[in-house]
Amino acid sequence: MKRIAVALLAVVVIATACGIPTSEQADVVAKKDVPLELLSPKVPSSSTTSTTLTAGSIEPLYFVNGANLLVKVPRAVAAPADLELVLDELLRGPSPTQTAFGLTSALPANVRVRGTAVINGVVTIRLNNAFTSISGDDQILAVGQLVLTVTSQPGATRVSFMVANAVVPVPTATGASTTAPVTAADYSTLLAH
Image (cartoon, rainbow, N blue to C red; front, side, top):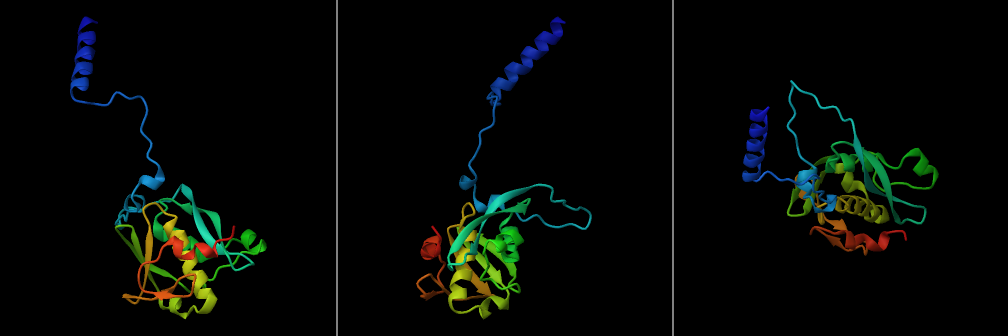
């Protein structure tokens, strides 16, 4: 019994000397403080393994109300809720219940995300050619939906748009066209209050 006590004391002394933390609880990091790249990891696929999405998170998406303003709507997104999954949920449009309450989307059903990249807070969204067919006020609202949804994600501050590997100009809420990355502030006047 004495040997066991001496061994346990030795383990405690060694563990303390090695700098193993003695806190009894974990430190929690706010989601907003985690870089987007860490929240949206790209895991290579393998033919020998499969991943089952079992849990999800609630993510903010933006849809259009009857007054042609953008409304933030929470949506459950399968885990891991990476940026492309969030955008896929946005492109699905409002749920039947949300549609019954008058919400729509300015994004046509044939618009698809071809990929995303994040560099220093700038998210580049690669879209299919259907994105360029949106025009007028719908184009402003559609871009606003995308930008506000993307910049709601931690670490995403600006958004750039590409179609067929070329940066495409997008309108801001004022109607001015730009190829520069846009921010949530560029569409804040479109938000319903």
